[in-house]
Amino acid sequence: MKIVFLGGGKMAEAIVAGLLGDGVCEAKQVMVCEIVEERRAYLAATYGVEVVDTVAEAVREADVVFLAVKPQVLGSVLVETAAVVPPQALLISIAAGKSLDQIAASFDTVKAVRVMPNLAASVGASMNVYCCNAQVQAQDRELVVRLLAAFGEVEEADESLFDAVTGVSGSGPAFVAYLLGALADAGVAQGLSEGQAYTLALQTFLGTAQVLQAQGGTPQALIDSVSSPNGTTVAGMQVLAASDVRAVLAQTVAAAAQRSQALRESAEA
Figure (cartoon, rainbow, N blue to C red):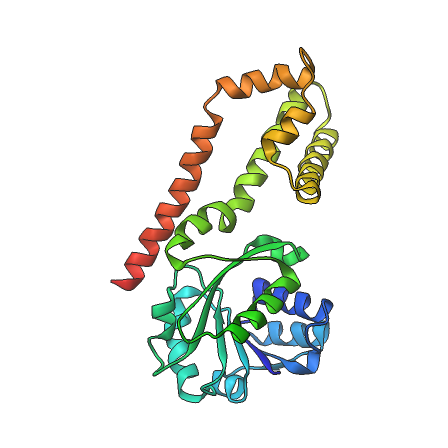
């Protein structure tokens, strides 16, 4: 299997690192097409992968092509790709806001997959949501899941939900970081040093997520398990329950989803 990356930026690097680290493929099976010479040299030296600077050279014998270029140049890259890529190749796009129809428009027929990863791909903990066009078969889906699982969790969703996906998990790391920072600031206000407060808040976010993941319970069940009658957690939760924090979070995700929709519709116009 030959896996090609068109674009060698941070997200492409995170995926390459995940694939190699998870043993999905060997470095000799990976090729990265990147126009910046310094970036090509770095990727070759760091991961041992082959690097080139032209699309045609990269995709001519590809089995899987990750489209990891910026959305504004994806159209021209797809035209170049369509002219030389093998007809059985699987195209996996991580370009934000580009629909399956837009990805497939340059081809007579193509197996196209759209993926929304997030920042946590850099530490192998991305939330990867994907959708496929009608040409993608069951065995192709199995390959997609195997590839995406190398750098995070995998979930399939209808493409109509991708604006919502963007709001929750695509943009979500920024929202979570904001909340973590707010919890740390609250600790500083109670007398902790900035370093102590940040360490406490960071580990609390990390540990809570791990508990929920390991035990499979709901957030409310966890809240109940640590809430003693007339205790400290109950006192704090009463303030949260009386606030509009849920409404603000709903508005935050809605704003991101609406922006995603607007960008997509602008690209389709």
